[in-house]
Image (cartoon, rainbow, N blue to C red; front, side, top):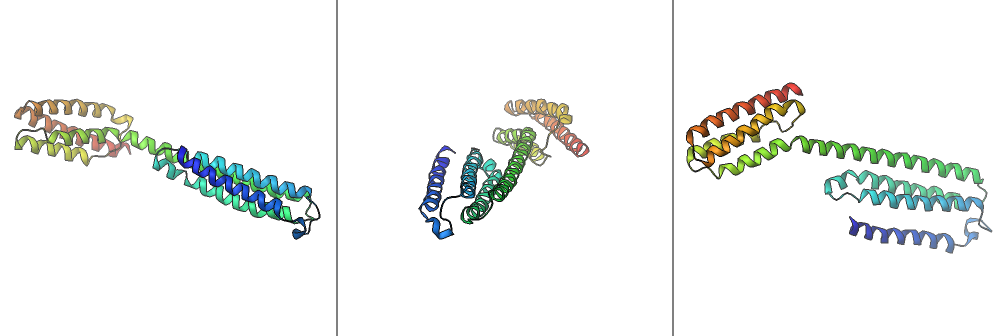
Length: 233
């Protein structure tokens, strides 16, 4: 993020400098003004504030380390860019119209700022909600994902074909189980974990009888968990 934002700051500074060069290098007479008026400064300050606001939005949008969370922040960048473009148009109009009352310029700029701020707040809130939901889903699927990984590794440890077949059957049952966990499944998931450890031990000891008995119990518990998952939804 730091490297990306450093490049972004360079581009932002160039754009801000270009804006100031155009504003102060252009003769006033081109826009029908003989001198810089109060409404000119209203437009200038308004555009400068929008430049700063856009930089702040970019900082928070580029802050996430993961690409997925960065994707959730894309609307923030789009909104800030759109607001800056609108600000440039409205601000430029207030700067170049010589007889525009100052209060009109202030009201127009304030409306744009308020609308932009509300849109940014909504985008940030939406990104936070989606990100929190994503973290919640990851946490709730950890049990099955971890168990499936262990079951897959166990297939390579079985010393005979019957043991490998049992391990594969257990792995497939776990793999195709409902991945979502909840508080109501904690008891049966604890039983599954304990039974899986017993199955792992039986496979390590090449105990055919215990392998079969433990595998059958595991399949029963996994099936019971899947039934409870459907009930709890």
